[in-house]
Image (cartoon, rainbow, N blue to C red; front, side, top):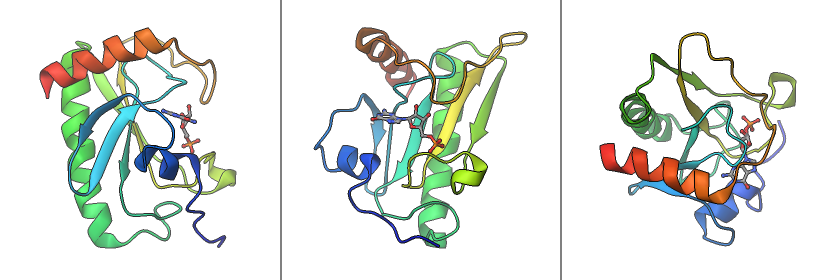
Length: 139
Ligand code: 5GP
C-alpha cells in the first residue's frame, strides 16, 4: 500500500495551511464542511493522526473518530431536519477515494432528494458558512 503523504490537502487543513469551514474540533478529531457537498450540511470528520485510510489507521484512532462521526450525524440530522443520515468512507482509488487522509463523509438525507455527484460542484463560501453555523448551533 502507498505510504501516507503528510502533504495531502486534509493534512494542510489540519495544520491551518489552507482554509476550511470547521464545525467541530477536539484533541483527536476535527470536522469541517465539504467544499463540494453532495447535499447541504455535508461534513467531513477526520482524525488529527495521519493515516491514508481505514486500512492503515490505528484502531485507537478509529475508536475516537467514530464517536465524533456519531456526534456529527446526530447534529446534521437535527440541523437540517433530515429524514436520515448517510455515512460513507472510501479506501483507495478503486473504491472512490480521492483525498488520502482518513475521513468519513456525514451527509443529511431527505426522502426523495437525490445526492449530488461525489466531488462535483464547488459550493459558495457563504452557503458553507451558513450551513456550518446551523450545525454548530446544534452542537
Ligand atoms: P473522498 O473521495 O476522498 O472520499 O472524498 C474527498 C472529499 O473531499 C470530496 O467530497 C471533496 O469534495 C472534498 N474535498 C476535496 N478537496 C477539499 C478541500 O480542499 N476542502 C474541503 N473542505 N473539502 C475538500
